Amino acid sequence: MAVTTVIAIAIPLLIVQLILMITALVSVVKKEVSGSDKILWILIIIFVSTIGPIIYFAIGSNMLDQKITQDEGDR
Image 1 (cartoon, rainbow, N blue to C red):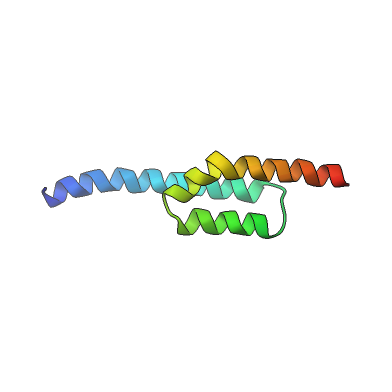
Image 2 (image 1 turned 45 degrees about the vertical axis):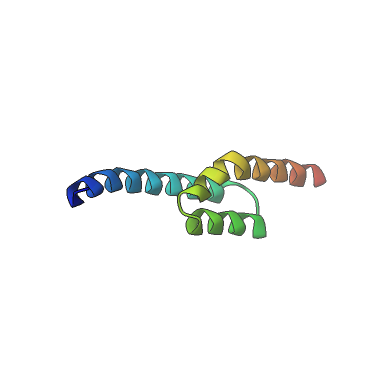
């Protein structure tokens, strides 16, 4: 496989990964959850690279929403 072919495939994948990561980070930061949950998801998104944001959108976003609802019920 030629170098140009690899670059032609890698650049769009890197752009998609970056957009996905930024979108997930913005979503976590906007959630009104405090403490270690938010920090944990930020670390997962950053250090697990491509899969981290996907895991967040599949599982973490709902978990944080439930935590927000639970915290509001405790008030």
